[in-house]
Image (cartoon, rainbow, N blue to C red; front, side, top):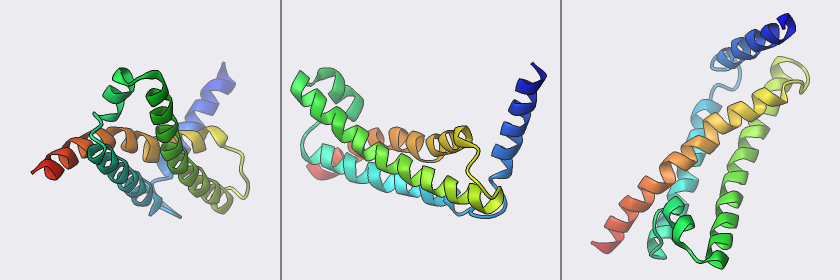
Length: 133
């Protein structure tokens, strides 16, 4: 149990420490990239007349749902890969190796994946209003 608590302490200490030091620009770069991809995808959705992404997935026909799901996975996979690449570089600069894959996954999800998911729907709504006026 002590080893697990030590791991959790190290995990959170290192997660917080990532906001300072080398490569802090990624805390701006990754959410910005997520916004740009959400902007692109949201505008595409609005031009195609599709509902917001999650609503579209619920109401679409099975073959449309499959294509939309593939599209969403592709868009978010690129964002996650950017986040993973940035964190791997960070780990090599700070620790000299890549020994913290869980931290890489958490950082990538927090800085890239979640912003994309949160922004795509609102971007679609705004783009739909803008396009129709």
